[in-house]
Structure formats: structure tokens, C-alpha cells
Image (cartoon, rainbow, N blue to C red; front, side, top):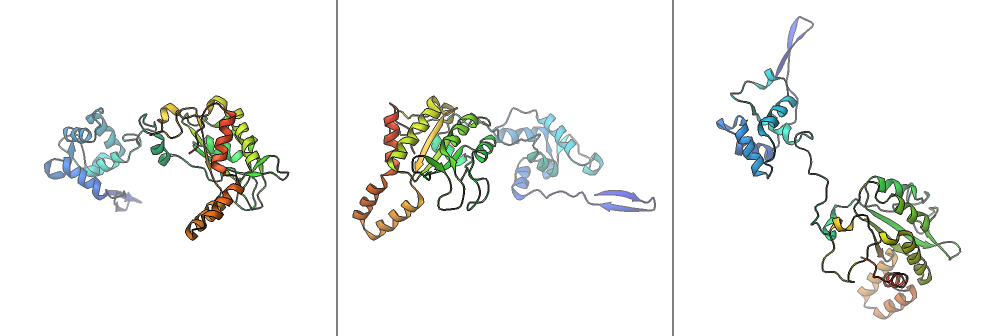
Length: 302
């Protein structure tokens, strides 16, 4: 509570306005505070840090800086020793300067299947606007990569003459962009914000001959940047550290095929399903096969 003169005539009192410490902060403070829980001295704060696995900080210095973040000294009340009050402790916990977030470095032992839960993902990464009538371009892809996005989705469709591959949001009025342009932009900007791997998810609406063309484009564009697993079915994925500066290709069948497959499986119509797979060209295995033809190694397709 602070008192201030107004117009030299009367005094007004203002309560120090700050968010109340939540219950878990109060509990942590009470567990380490002394003198009936009114303050946390340096040795008690040091024990708190050690309990959290952080014994590398100077407790006295942190307390001194933490006190400076709070209200003026006469508003805090007098303490017998330099110490944190509950409010000081609360401010310390949420201070970017004194208690910054966990460092952004990815642990080397984190495997890729775990890393996928932590990735910034791009959905329809090529769209400049809405999903119905906007332009498709490599510009949003470049922007996403510069912002740290690690997964780029590309929807592949045959172009108007059926002899090349366009990227667009299918069955809409979106204008297409060529696949090769997107791939070249990804190569140029993939690691501008982070050295960790970029995953390109290809939603495949192509015929087998165009799948083969995609495989050639991918291998020619990325070359040694491509990740090739040691085996087709690894027991565990490599760590992000070992995948720095690598491009990983992921393929998936189109949504309409998955929906039709699910309906037919429910109806038990396996024969028709097999016929459809033959007509469709078994896209996911087909792209894998074509990649194997282009390269002497097995490609990483998740």
C-alpha cells in the first residue's frame, strides 16, 4: 500500500497492483521459507535452487537483483536479512532475466519420434491466403522456414498437361506453384533459423510416372542433404543432433483415398480395395520404389 499527496491538499492511498501468487508458488515458498513463512533468506533460497537441480547460481546475488524488480523498499517492509518475500519469490519465478525459460537447445539424446511432438508444423505451407481461392507460392514456405518451422507440407497434383507436378490445394480455385520451385526454396532457406532437420511431407495425388519424376527432382535438388536410414525399419530414430542440416522426406496418401479405404474396410470389400490400389498405383510404396531407383540407398519415408 502506498500513500501519495494529491494537489498538496489530501492523501490518497493506492494498493500495489500485482497478480497474486498462485497456489503452487505459495506452496513452494512455504516449504522453504523461515520465520513462520514470512520470508526466504539466502540459505533457504539456495536450498530451493538445489532442490530444483540448479545449484550454479549465487543465491545472494539473485535475491539482490530480485528485490530490485519489486516495489520501492519502503513498500516492502523491513526484513532482518536480505531475503525474498512471497511476492519477491513470485516475481523471481516469472522473471525472464533472473529465471529464463529452459534453453532452446534440443537435447542430443532426444530421438526423432519424440522430437516430432516438439516441432513447429506447417499445414498447407504454400498458401498465401485462404484455402479456397488464394495463390500458391514458395514465399509462405520461405517465411515459415525463417520463423523456425521444421515441417513443410506440399500437396502434389498433376499440372494441366499431366506432364509435370504442381503444388496446390486440390479441388479449389487456388492457383498452383511448381513443385521444383518449392523444393529449391526449401533447400535455400531450410536452415536459416535452425540447423535441425526439415521434414517435407508430400501428399501424393500423382500417377506412377509423375511419382518417378518427383523422386528425380527430390534427389537432384537436395543431394547429400537427404537423410537415408541405415535400414528400412530402424528400431529407433537417430537423434536431432545427428540429423542437423538434413532433409527428411515423408509421404502420405491423399485424404480421399484414406476415406474410401476406411469405408471399404468397414464394409469388408477387400477385393474392390485391392482394385483401387492397383488403379491408384499404390502411391506411398510407389514413391519409395522410384526413389530407390534414383538412388543407391533407401530413402527415409515415414
